[in-house]
View 1 (tube, rainbow, N blue to C red):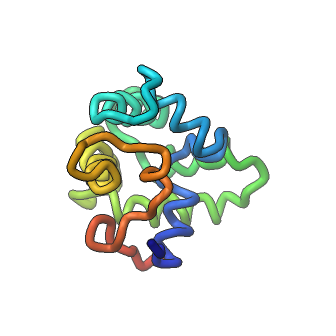
View 2: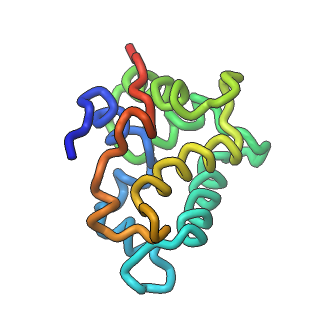
Amino acid sequence: MSRPAPLASCRLLALSSAAFAETRDERFRRIDVDRDGVISHDEHSGNVEAEFRKLDTDGDGAVTVEDYAAELGRKTPGAPRVALLSVARCFFRIVDGNGDGKLSLAEMRSFEDRIFKWLAGSDGRMTLEESEQGPPPEVIPVPVCN
């Protein structure tokens, strides 16, 4: 399955801040809490909540573009701040459902759930192989980012 280039690069940089600290295999194994070789929706949901809490450093229930860029910077030392902010803004165009410039847990969960449901398919359980696919634009729209 091919990925649209703009989404693939934005997704590579932004969809998960943990992606830079660990390989895809390591991330999959971390999320697969029961070690059965698949990620259930419950495991996925627990991971989304944990990642959101890590991004929401002040605990106010919202993640800002600056918060997200700071986390990306921790995961990619030496990356120019202007590039990190650009990637964060691009990510927010996709995820910030109400356009208020802040991500709530509900917005993050909605975004991540769309991806999970597409990847997991009808059985609701995502394999490592399924996790390596890039969702098409009808699942996650291709943002226009500068």
